[in-house]
Image 1 (cartoon, one colour):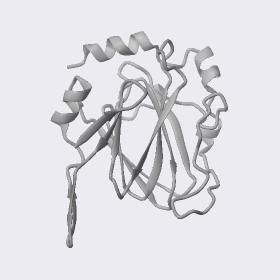
Image 2: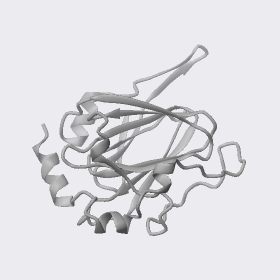
Image 3: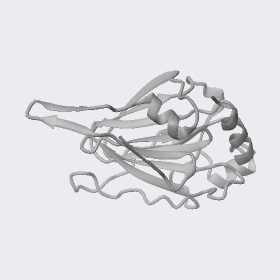
Length: 204
């Protein structure tokens, strides 16, 4: 298992070793000890979410209030997605920047994003299945979103599916109505970089 830090502090790409033969494939998709050694604290699994998306579906950009926030370990066991991590921590040196990782059923990579970061993805194939290991359970009053098509974010979303066909984006009503990054910051909705750092330092 190889772990590579992304350009957004607090996010990593995880590439597992794949062991395959004529019967199929085996991989260690998650190793708590390895992850905690990189992240600096234990990952407490509170909830596992699963979504299935048609090609062109955009989900995000989602985030949760800190504390406690919600760290996520995201994989795509079937299909393919472009996974996007956005730095929404006010005061961060990379505030407003994003990084991407292709998650699919070929390389079987994962991403881990710490509390205080924004997350979204674009499905690149019909039936793309995404699993999220979450450090906290669902709390609708503390969970928010930013419009993934906000021009200020400048996210370069894919225009073609994995099979080469053009993508037509599809968003939920909630994500469509989500504020821009600037509006979310002006309303005090976004996490503070220093407060997030202090909270993460308190975790063991």
